[in-house]
Length: 343
View 1 (spheres, rainbow, N blue to C red):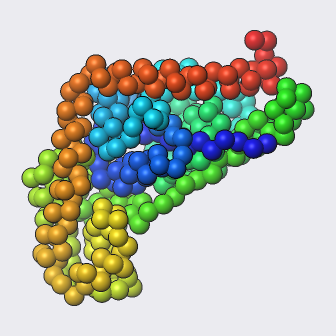
View 2: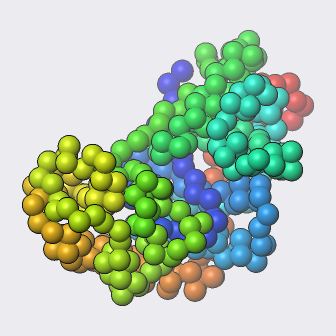
View 3: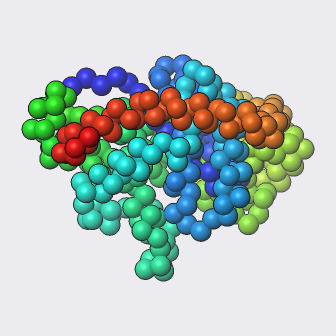
């Protein structure tokens, strides 16, 4: 069965969106608007799998929505909404819980990392959230998902669940007129030179909101002065920048800054090294400051303005949820018919 191409992706509202979120995800979302129909979701149901502050969660939902719009996502042409307003996500997740196998979930490495040593006290939601993620994607029968390397395993699970549902209910799917399979097997979209942005204080660690040092990351809400200061203080090494890529081997901080410059400028890393190779970091950082402030400063200013306008942000989410539900509801109705529920 041929499926209409549709992109789905979600961002968890856990606060402090940073340069890694922007370059690793949001900038790709903006680009995809030009070639695909897109659904972008603030996945607030995922945000409660671990302890959280309800008041802060509300603020974070609005902040992520503001970031989407400030970065260039058009909520009128595409769908921007928060997950909890569309009940079909949770409804399909339960059906998928009865399709997915425990052995599949036991292989999910992110649960082991997030739960740590005290796995017995982790919530069922934290263990099971890859199934909800599969439902997030497949309730819209989305065909493509922009993902980072750390989410590829979860997309593989979504494909496994879709395939098993199609196989388990093949006869019913055909009987209800849906051809050879009801769900597509969603494909990953991985693009860009800096999909993995590292800490400004340690080039071997991923940039993270949970890092104790605010100087380890550039927050999307940072103003021009903060951005400039963080770039200037970013860890480097005493050697000049190399002129060719192999020269970045075993120089994680240099490689990280070159990757950031390449991603923000739209150039290749080779081009960056061609322009700056042989020079000192002070000169390169000065150019990176100018570039980062020019690219990120306006985003931070717009985010602050939008985040303060609760009525506007809430209206965007309500409209997006209505449009998302218009796609999800008939798909969920069909799933109920296929599995044998009486509608």
